[in-house]
Length: 183
Figure (tube, rainbow, N blue to C red):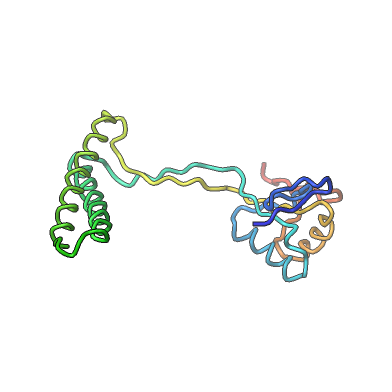
């Protein structure tokens, strides 16, 4: 990864732009990517652009109820996989006299036992505060295309040619935002 140097000789991050300006804001990443791709096709120096996800939200999707048997089965499965891994590692250093099957079975058995115990103890410590399983993600709700200040005018001109390209509404000389005729 290379680092660029600023005019003062201080290295800047390759993820940073010099004096970035907003070019456009989109509701989804695909639209922002389409705008950057269009600018690339128009021979714009795309290394002066950046797509930034903004208005972050944490989403948690509940995948099921946690019960003692379900926790025990999950611990058993995790323990079996961990035991198998440990058994394979031990086999790498075992002598030829040792039985591979004995090593694998014993480590899988111990892994399963400790997996169940660890899962049930961990579940008991929650004391019913979290009796569900879930998957979480952080997602952006808006995607802003930023451009270095020295190329902002050129980028806005080119992006205005893209249908739905939405140049920055706050740019000097931009048309006023449409008003809602109903409300």
